[in-house]
Amino acid sequence: MPDTKFGCLPTAIGSMPHTDPQAACSQVVRYLRDIPAWPQLPGRSFAENMYVQYSEGFPGVVVSADSIYVKRSQDLSRPLENLYAAYLEDDADRYPISPEYAAGLRAFLNLEGLSPRAVKGQVTGPVTWGLTVTDEDKKAIIYDDVLGDAVPKLLRLKAAWQEKELRRISKNTIIFIDEPYMAAFGSVGVMLSRERVISLLEEVFGGISGLKGVHCCGNTDWSIILKTGLDILSFDAYNYAQSLSLYPAEVKGFLGRGGAIAWGIVPNEVEPLVKESVASLKDRLEEAIAPFTRNGVSFQQLIEQGLLTPSCTLASLATEEASARALELLTGLSTEIRKRYL
Image (cartoon, rainbow, N blue to C red; front, side):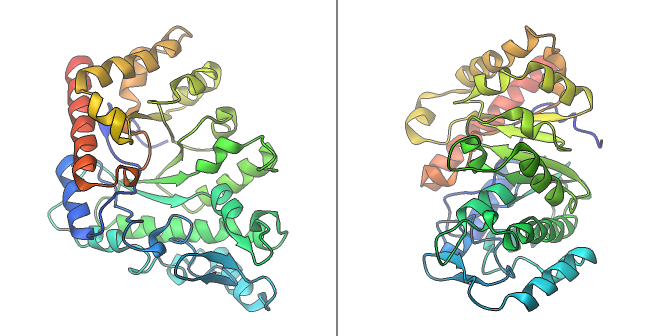
């Protein structure tokens, strides 16, 4: 596994409240100098919605001003053939992410003078994408035998293309697979087996040669995520710290093979954000870490093999000022933790 001793450096989940990609990038590089993440701008256009942003090229996909679905009734044999050919040939250039769908990515790639330790990107995960996007009969395409198999193949190509582009900024890349729907795993809304979830994630991982992460902003069965070949586990430690502490053996094994934990410790909602300080977040982070140390995991290892992030998307904060406040707290906390423990 590549080096994951980040020492609690800060990075972000991806989405920001901005509509101007240049302004978003300016905020990113101001606060996240070591590990910048390109900004997704869902407030700018529906095309940057996380379910639309990576949909270009999917067989039968139809995107309107405010909806996305797959027209299953048409002949999809040729588009499926093209997708599978690109997948088998590892030809990610045939499935790029266009500027219309990711203005923040294009602006980020055009920045000059960056010399970060690593650079971060993100792609919507196959579970979340496949459960959200439906056919014209409102059936989630993940349950379609043909289209469900195509989902991770498209996302793998999108991740591979993105990683190749990000290497223009740094040879050290991190790609997160964002899986908010894993919070519903085990409910009647997610009729997927553990084995299927692992297989879906691993297929997307196959297109990523750098560090691979999974982000879930709710409570889930973390043993499933930790069973995959991920390098970084990202979770909402502000609201759901206890959820991960229920899996001490799995976390210890994950860290033992070099894995890192991204602690989403800065809130992404306005009301709690205004009440927090670097000192209060430091206390909260140490409280989140404590259960692991009681189960034989080294505190120093958790700090060394850690990243700090907001709890989830910053787009929910709605204003650029609130986003800046969250990132200011994040970088301040990182500085304090590194000064105190490293």
